[in-house]
Image 1 (cartoon, helix red, strand yellow):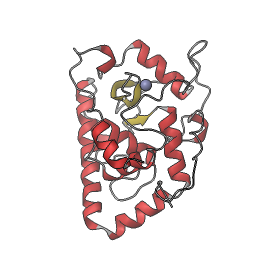
Image 2 (cartoon, protein in one colour; image 1 turned 90 degrees about the horizontal axis):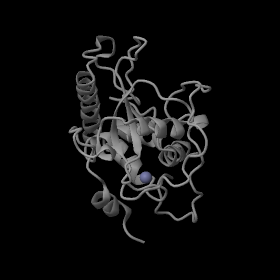
Image 3 (cartoon, rainbow, N blue to C red; image 1 turned 60 degrees about the horizontal axis):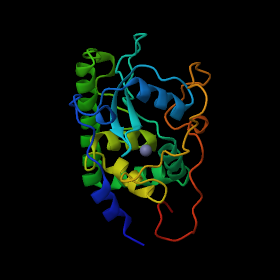
Length: 238
Ligand SMILES: [Zn+2]
């Protein structure tokens, strides 16, 4: 078996460029098709999505960027929302296996890691400010200094960290990167896992029947990730 981290680094696509003049499937600008795919991925209509900061190699969205202020005026700190059902399910498995507890313990004992995580928090705030700027929303002072996922000192939601890592590219959020490496038996950035990952038949959801729970709630993650074939010791988690 190939070393998974090596495979990850060479296969990880660059974050989506800000230049919206490129092909639509590579643009940050959400197309009508992107919004439909997002609503199918999540099983509910999406609102206030202003950019697609990470895409599958096939062009489908992996992460949606939500405006820092919703159209109803509500400040919204969670900018990067992981939408791809294969990834959300796989990340839920890491959470269920207790990886967040382990990360929190390491954050309190490993100062270089803690410093890198604080830097990730700063990156998140900067990226959100830039998105607010580009989308014409501007500053949202109510959420100054507030990022998401437990940053800068805790890990409360791995989906948030993975969404940030996919949006920012490798080397920005150490714990998001670690979680991405940890799901490599179910999802890797170099391949398309979209086929069959969400319902493509019938009309896309247009009525919001779900609660907008925190990122990664089981009721919105779609089909479960494939079961591990072996209980080998080289996998993620315990
Ligand atoms: Zn794909």
